[in-house]
Amino acid sequence: MSRNLLSLVLGKLRHRPDPQAPRLDPPRVARAGDLRTSAPPILVIGCFRSGTSLVRRILDSHSSIACPPESKFLVPLTSVLRDPAAVRGLRGMGYQRADVAAAFGAFASGLFARYAESRGKTRWADKTPDHVECLDELWELFGTGTRFVLVYRHGMDVAFSLADPRRNYPVIRDHVERAGGDVAVGAATFWAEQTRLVERFRQGHPEPCFVLRYEELTTSPEATLRPMFDFLGEPWEPAVLEYDRFEHHRGMEDPDVHRRTRIEPNSSRYRAWSGDRQRVVRAACEPLLSELGYG
Image (cartoon, rainbow, N blue to C red; front, top):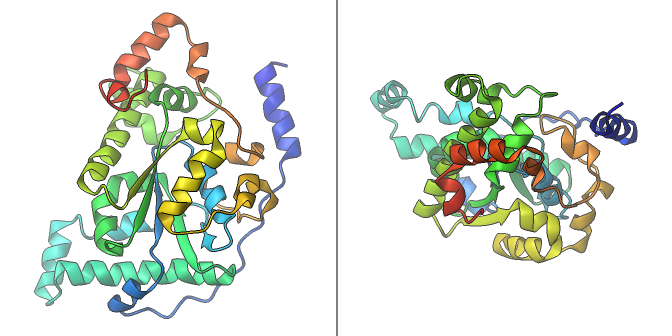
């Protein structure tokens, strides 16, 4: 049995299943204006395999913040705002785009706030990698108080992880096809495309964004997380470093997070590739890799 397979088996044996969230009654649909009086929402944004699941569990361990598994429903909700025909149809009914966005935001916030309330928390966060595709619309939905935690990770490590032959990531399928079937190169171009979208949003909205680098988080957790919680306006709680002590609900997220019970270094695995292979994948990550300071 290979070392990687043995590690996978042992990880599954040690895994403590997360509980299912209790059934909740739907919240009363808030008026659009009610949203602005609630605690600012927190949106964790990052490419698949960038460490967003770890950040989700850290946030969910804070006494004030509830961060569920991937919600997924915001993407189809925001698709209405990306559909010109839908916007024209609503306008024909007398609804302006800004009012529709605020109403959608109030509805979504109500669902998240009800979840947070059920867990004895006063603030909600959400972590869904698909949200990279609809950042501008999320800004419309939730308003200027929203706080975005942008998780960046070395593109070659992301590509190495997405190219794991034991896994299948449909999200990179089109990129792999365009790369002639080369999974690692397709994964690298996927990372570059997704991270470019995040960077464009950050450059257009610098004040509500906090950049968290996965490499810094996993090597210097407290020094990295203290500024993040300060940015979020929440007091530092050392217990978040031991996120596995807390209960987190079961749902859609990266399964690897279950096998890692503590914050630990997990970078530069791409160096397992040959030098030639590294050069090919690196080229697919450029020029963004260098722009972000990844040597």
